[in-house]
Image 1 (tube, protein in one colour):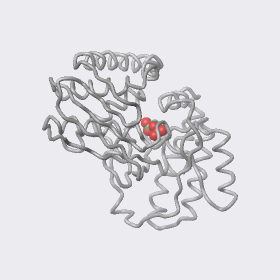
Image 2 (cartoon, rainbow, N blue to C red):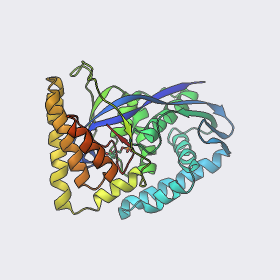
Image 3 (cartoon, rainbow, N blue to C red):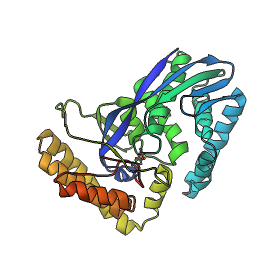
Amino acid sequence: MPSYSVPGKVHLIGEHAVVYGEPAMIAAVGRRCVVSAEKSDKIEIYSADFGSRTYEISEAVDFAKDVQALWKDGLAKKDFSPLFQLMRADKWNFRKAAIGIVLRELGIDGGVSISIKSDIPIGSGLGSSSALSVGLVAAIQAAYGKQLVREQINDLAYKLECINHGTPSGGDNSACCFGGLVWFQKAQPKNIIMPLNEEIPHSIDGFVLLWTGMPERTTGELVQAVRNLDENYRKPRMKEIGQLCYEMKTVLKARNYARMKEIINRNQQLLAELGVSTPTIDRIAEVVRGIGGAAKLCGAGGGGTML
Ligand code: PMV
């Protein structure tokens, strides 16, 4: 039974701005989602956290079609709230639709029996849904001997991310799929996904991930809230985060950790100005700054994990 262990991720810098074409630096973390799959005549899902569900193949595939139609509609109307509502209505909806999409996209007629075990906290900015998306694609294609390469797994995982988040940047799934420290930037015709392990080979110690509470809003909702900001307010902040990201690469190569901390603190300030911080995160960031450290929220924000 093919089994894939996919890491979660943390944004060193660049979340939200990456949605607007700025670069981001994203690192894999030591928490993982393990997905195994084998052929079946049904869709069976065993989840260590949620229990189990069984669907007829046609049920999942038809649901996937409906969900993708809803996504297309959301894209045209620039409003994904009906899709987000459907995904929120039942925690199984994402899994059911995601598996249906993978089967459709890979032209698989049969079903799958899938087992999911994850220690990445959900909705916390650590890429739990991205790792699951990558794991589902990797395990299902392997169960049917499709031999997709990593780029193809990543591209299909992005489609699964879309039904969860609307129009995500693709940075999260790329970091989970490629691992290590990744430079990511949305681009046409192809996104830039550059492993930084050779440019920055040394380890950077002293990071701690801190849980600040369950976000009330999902990634998709937070991204939408940022999109709703006045463009003249949003744009310069996104540009600055992008510039800080370029500087971060130089600074990490030079092991200039004093400047690294300043960049992280400025990044947090800009994220707060974009409305995705919380009073708790602001307070923790202030305390950490006060003792000479640096702290920022991770991922979409609104709670979740801090770096
Ligand atoms: O909170 P997460 O782990 O889903 O990360 C979201 C990162 C954003 O930049 C806010 C969105 C994106 O699509 O890149």
